[in-house]
Length: 116
Image 1 (tube, helix red, strand yellow):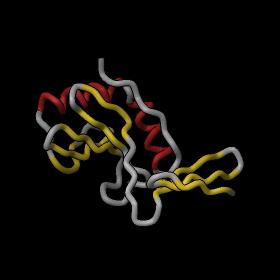
Image 2 (spheres, helix red, strand yellow):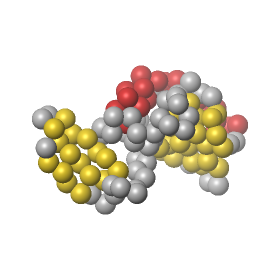
Image 3 (cartoon, rainbow, N blue to C red):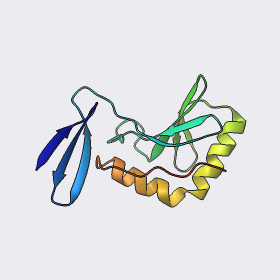
């Protein structure tokens, strides 16, 4: 097993698997997509607070945690932007669940194409 320190992450390799782990005291929230002013992020190992798959969405001064099923779990986002987000999430549902399953295991996930 090898460890490599990045800005706020440790990468460790176990066989062919590569895991990214936040350095102690650091939060790591990689961006999964960005479109029309919306920034969508997913936190590694983030299943304690909401206990369901979700993304963190930022739009200007708005912030929200939104379940992959579309439920707003925390915060708020304007209705127009929520509808764009919900449409994007429906189109990319399988990719989002795949990213979530990797994120909760501290594994790298791929970015997802933006809404066009």
